Length: 245
Ligand SMILES: C[S@@+](CC[C@H](N)C(=O)[O-])C[C@H]1O[C@@H](n2cnc3c(N)ncnc32)[C@H](O)[C@@H]1O
Image 1: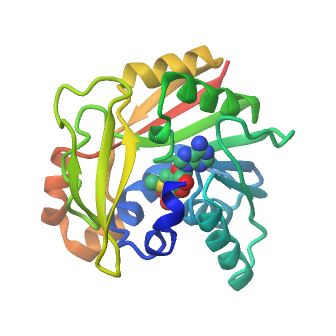
Image 2 (image 1 turned 30 degrees about the horizontal axis):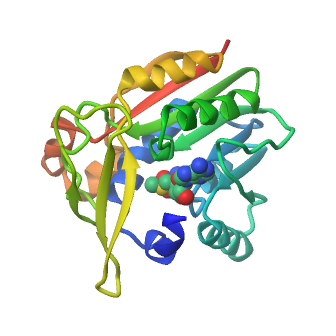
């Protein structure tokens, strides 16, 4: 799995966008999770899964296809026990035989390599939602995908492939500079907002709203507002909140 190779680097990448943009977006979209059960699909090293538990989730479970990242997540759980559980699993096929109030997925649906993969991931999400459950995701912004990719705490050094007129399923290869100085390439896939919407609808969910990125008060305090203007003018992420039909 491509994230196995960069797992230890992944956990140490600078996290400005993650911490000051994606985290407050996720918090706003999930709302009050106190007492709720939450499943985080494509959880990586559990960065967001741990926050979901901190915000009061009764149960937080993370699933990721990368054994190395799940190992790191579990190590964190040993260091600072929160009661978060992690499983190695594929979001296209994982079945926990349990339903959750909220399923979240941050920057993971875009690793679906085909419409079939995207559809299967959406079926997994629906399968794990309670009847009034919500699915909350952050995806690369389909319209402004490439902007700001090299700024705001990112280790991407270059990107090959087209950056305009992208078609559904087109591969985007990012190059990361690892801490040992070697360059490592990994792929994700372009999906338009319509493609995400089609898969979500076909799986039996509907989109309640899309959320534009914003910066937390903490991020503004740390760097000042002008620092973020470039990001907010062409943000590289987009949030969406769905509910089970
Ligand atoms: C960019 S990382 C995001 C990780 C985490 N959500 C975060 O934001 O820190 C994408 C994650 O999706 C995971 N992933 C990709 N394809 C997957 C699949 N089919 N099933 C489960 N996880 C997958 C990768 O292993 C990786 O951890």
